[in-house]
Image 1 (tube, helix red, strand yellow):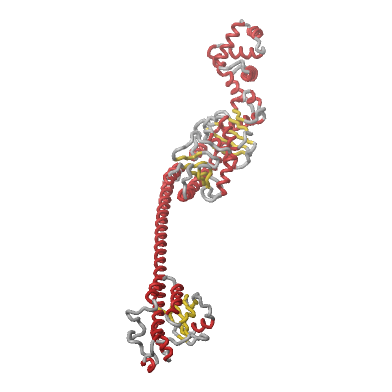
Image 2 (cartoon, one colour):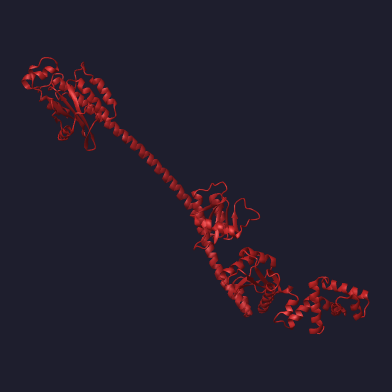
Length: 601
């Protein structure tokens, strides 16, 4: 390529004056052939090299500078700056290829204008002349590499160059082209190295991501398998908290929506387990419900089991050191799904069982067939062959719907009962084989409902399904007495009503006889066995207003004998005659014994 440039330049060398400028007399061959022949010290293929002992213009030193540069603009500027040292030349402009366009390189020469740019662009990547005012010679040398054009070096001169000048210029062009090619190669090598390094970094990042993904998938599969194993074991809450503790290394627990602990696995379980106030528990549930995924509440990460918007339970891990990460959140998210599924299943079963149990109790309150009652109770896991008690609950805040019924049932279970439950208007009726603890049941309902404003009535012992309707009426009577008394909140047992039992509606002979037997039964039996008059003595004592002298006179006994009898009455009956309520019940019982039962019982 540079050969064509050199030959194009040589064809314009024609005058002896120009040859003389190179230094020395003109060669005869030059005059005859117009510089078509090259000097002897050049290769036949063109201006390839200088004489071995000649470098008068510093091209060797320049080559070191050119090949030491990595920037194309700097290489072109060095070449342009060295042009004037080769002869009467001036560097007019330099161009470098930028993509598919020629871009003029910056230089000290500001004379180059758009005309030069057009002239160079019209050369179509070949060498060619460029006209400059007041300059006899101008030429654009193409700077090339094997793959194409690198740029242009545009020179001008007041004289036409001779062969020696052409040799120097051609050498400079070749050196510049080679330096540009080398710089481009270095840039490509550097870019390739950077690309390789970037590719390696990307590959390493991809490998790390793949490793992380593989580890994450392995962890997820392990979680799925562990939770599937829990489901295979029945999905109970203890198995779930054990799996959650093993997967996270943190203590795991399940609570119901009211903050009652259902299951705990891991160290640090508090004893006794604290219960939040209803207001604080509701605030916590709302806080967690507003979040997405596990929400930190104090030292715990909490998620809610709420398959259809209704909170069925609370799943948590205890994390006081805040070591939980995304994997912990993943485990919690999937574990709470298992918990929600299990609690939903449990609730469905409970609702079916509850419906059957309610239907059974409704029928028992209406006096159903005993054989059918025994069979149906066995089907729902309740043994009617045992003694039972009927409990009626009425609460000021209790709604006449199933929500109130569920609350009463939970409270009854908390109080140690396992009852059959149904609803009658705004009251809830329970049938339980465990003798209720009135204070414990009332306290449990107070906690559940958030207010103590309620009353409970409890019937006497019921020994057969046939007697349940009667015991239900007695529980209602006990409830009504409580609701109309001065202290309207609490629990009243029918057995404790005393006088109120026979003064209420529905009293009959059997009721009166039962009342007398309750208060005077031991004395009546003692009199029957020993032929004594303990009941009559007690009745006369009350008729005389508790006066010893009048009572002794009426009975025709000595005062000391009366005192002895009263002492025996206390011992046999187990009653404290000094207690006001006891005295009242005993007095009523003696009146009923004497007047309504004719002194029998």
